Length: 360
Ligand SMILES: [Zn+2]
Image (cartoon, rainbow, N blue to C red):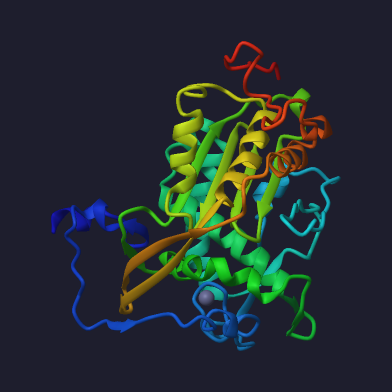
């Protein structure tokens, strides 16, 4: 059991990380998540620990406001011109105004000030330190931090919280938007417990990119997501590019390796190239999907979750749809124009089929 002790107490880990040896601490409860369990908590409970929120000052479950896009991120990377763009029905593009108060989520004091801020501080140091520092951040931290952003965004999209009346009202998103985040919301218990996942593949994907970062490539911040399937988030933060696929069982990591692993190894990408990959990732991720059943053993300190994913159909192949997503993500309208049937324009490959270096 020595290896178990070497892992941090909190976070999300695979059972493979423990050589298959996990002390289950007999005495936990066994349960399965019902389909509406997550949705029923929206608005009245903390979105991280799911405890009921109170207004009592002395209580650790007192309601606080959690910034979806943390202040350090806004201060260092976001411009005052960033604004919200609404969905075209297929995917939603959002970027947040630095002064916006719309991106606050009700959260309990303990989760906000103690548990989440530990992860937040590590991410903040890594991102502000540039690509090399960012690469040292654990995947558990990156996953939890990204989950908090996408889950919070959808959460306030479904139930917009009014901090003056302390009541939730229905927002601009249908509650079905949370459907693909049920598993993620469970894994977010990694903020306050050791979560160990038993599954052949990790239930999410993390892709990290080294980006060219000069004043001329500004803005040096960008955010895009896909909320309807596939649930995916992409962030450009200075020299760091990050794509996270939720509940995709490593599909995006496999897809990237197959298509770009060799071509882009060791390359420093122009931000537009990064956004092309993010657009292609959203398209590719949507071609299939997963139905997941799972069982849980849980106690105060930890959760052991066994996943059984089964593949299901997604969107049909459609080169024009791919080109449209890439054009939207890169904000280069010309990339939506398909010259030869079945192919989509790209910034990644030159006419000889080699990697195309784009000056910053
Ligand atoms: Zn909480």
